[in-house]
Image (cartoon, rainbow, N blue to C red; front, side):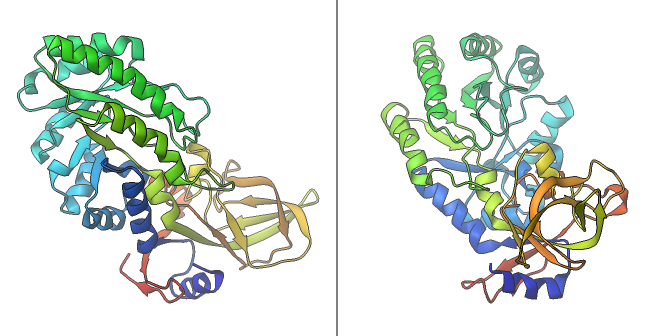
Amino acid sequence: MDFTTIQNLVAIYGTPTLFLSENRLRESYRSLKTALHGVTLHYAVKSNAAPQIVSILSNEGSFFDICSNGEIDVVKECAVAPQRCIHTHPIKRDSDITYALNYGVTTFVADNEHELNKFIPYREKVRLLIRMSIQNPGCLVNLSHKFGVAPEKTWALIRKAHKLGLTVAGISFHTGSQNENALKYIEALEYCRDIYRKAALYGINFDTIDIGGGFPISYLTPVIPLVQFCQPINEYLDRFFSKYHIIAEPGRFISGPSVTLATRIMGKSLRNGLWWYYLDDGMYGSFSGKMYDHADYPMWVERGGQRHSSVLAGPTCDSIDIIYNDISLPRLEIGDLLIFKSMGAYTSASASNFNGFPQAKIVLINSQNESKPVIRNS
């Protein structure tokens, strides 16, 4: 969307508003589906659980990765069949397991013996994927810091599950969120290859491998083109795992680029020689992704001219609600519009109503030509 289009939309919907592009959402899903040929995509609902997103992806044929009872409620509301879902949270209460089973989900993830024991009463109903950790300090968020069994201990855990009478369908792993190093997938698959050979000799019949998510998107700097990024992954899967069902759990790649935030300056102040601009969205709202996801988002401003070191702050009374402490901006005025792109992942998902400021509304737009959007109900 161009700036004029967003201005026209803001005239209707006000700010702060997150504009969700249906076209861009579908494009992201389709491009990853094409680039990872033969891989079943399970959209990671945690990245953005907006029902609009889930419904659109469901219509595209997507499967889903859910982690909680609340996420189950979202996919149920969107009439997603439970057979299209896997439950990937490695740590669960018994009530979480029964809630998922009652919905119809039967594939779960575990990463330690205590979790295996929870499934013994349900062993006739469930299939397990054993979560293996892959350390990746170079990614945006290392998702093996909190979960996953070390590669050298994964086989022992699989054997333990087998002895308990549990069905182990295969291994899952996650190379880290916003992972720009495709060779990390190969590293993980090398471990899997060795373990899958052992399983075959031991009489454990794996049929699935879950390569997780982490596929990167461009924020302030471009990332490697998707087809090029996926090429070594495809080659390795084709060579060594062609007989297995391969699944992935993309979240950011699909939801991230599809959302644009429009926010206005609600106040300004000259403090210690710096201009402070107070927006109607902030760290407790859509910019929560800066704190929890460590992301920075491309920004447009409608004014030009000489730039000065400035501060962008959110609307709440908390001093932690500062988006940028030192950012170069032209002289802005109260009421000016600021646009932030690629704000679909881990933004509204972790936003709150702290201090009584409501979360940004989500407006779904759809058009073959996005300069003339058709608005749907949010």
